[in-house]
Image (cartoon, rainbow, N blue to C red; front, side, top):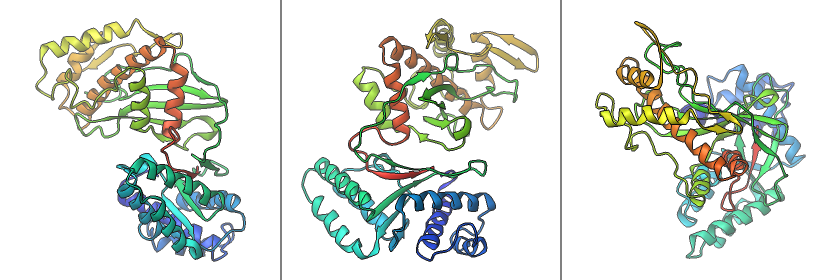
Length: 394
């Protein structure tokens, strides 16, 4: 769910109490709006109509999944959720929770909670943390199958989306065979500068579109905090068209690293660690020349049959418009301190160029479809046997 940590907690707790009110107290999501609003306001005082609409659609998808089941404890900040996540961290070697399981809330049968917790402790008491993780995941699959426990990953549902969907993830079944293909001409790292805002690139990302079966997805790799001059670039996927707005999320770095390492490729580092990106105001000529040459070379490469779209390499400044890789780099360096986002957009764009070249190398190795699969399942947190099972509502 979007927003900062405090706001996200309120939004997710809103889902938690809304689910409980409908499933356990029998409130009707269509007819008991006023009562449900008061329930949600206890944990999310600023809730608006968009979120109430989202909760309405979420709970309907959840009810379709669990049927008439009830008698659950609904947990986020205390209770069962921190208990099971603590086991994953201390006994199973999970360093970052969301890389293992992106569940935002947990439902667990109240009358079975104690026995489930005892079994969780028992099966994760081995000295080998990897064995413990696999045992934990297998037991969770059984609990989910029996509807004794439901870890739920939540996505905000837009008002324009008629219904939310509920989909199991990492439950061990064979993935449906899908065709993954890049949309021709969609791979781009637009280097036009200063046309939308003085002193900034017109966009900050490396972007592409691809299809998974009939669904089209937009991907972008960028710094998601432009106010930081030199920051990590992350990869994010969002479906287009009818499914637009229901983000798949950010692609796990573990999924990226697994694919790239296996195929002897390097993941671009953060801008602060890139040897060819100097701090603002400290640019060396050797690195200026490096990026000018990098852009000029990249113009000659293709992905999926089309040249990478670098825009027109047009630079707009107070003195007029110029064109060229040299002009782009020099203008971006000169303007790094001119706006709050200028330096962050610039370094994000440079790392985007590295990602663009990686795509060229991936296709040259004949791995483009496997790469798209990695991005897709990496965003869904379904990229390996060590990922925990959950129910995604989106």
